[in-house]
Length: 140
Image (tube, rainbow, N blue to C red; front, side):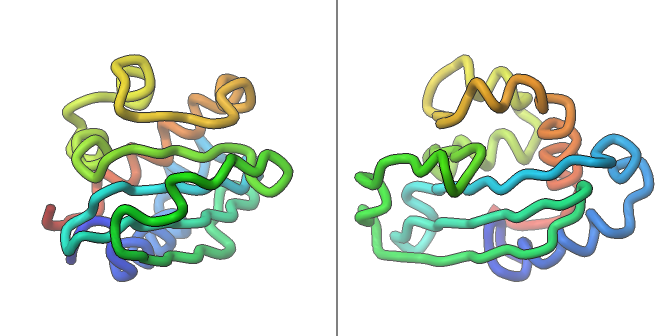
């Protein structure tokens, strides 16, 4: 399956529901966040809304638009989302391949987080979530 495809997103939801170690690490985690993936293969930007309740993905909405999309100019809606991550496809892929961790991705640039103040208390849960994604087999 392709990275950031609908099939990959669906596999994340299944893994979140079945992985006991992940469940322990994210118990009680409620958040709504979004990912904006810039310049994905096929010349598209991808926007994914993630609604997580008690560590589980209760809904996900994945969309594509030709790149560069108007999403790139939209301001962050802090009333709708706790966090928005924005990065080129390759930066997301490096994070997923575990070539860098979540905090290094933020600090080294190219990976922007809106809502950073709200991210800090949940870094452990976010790291558990990104680690879980790295175990979903995919092609880049």
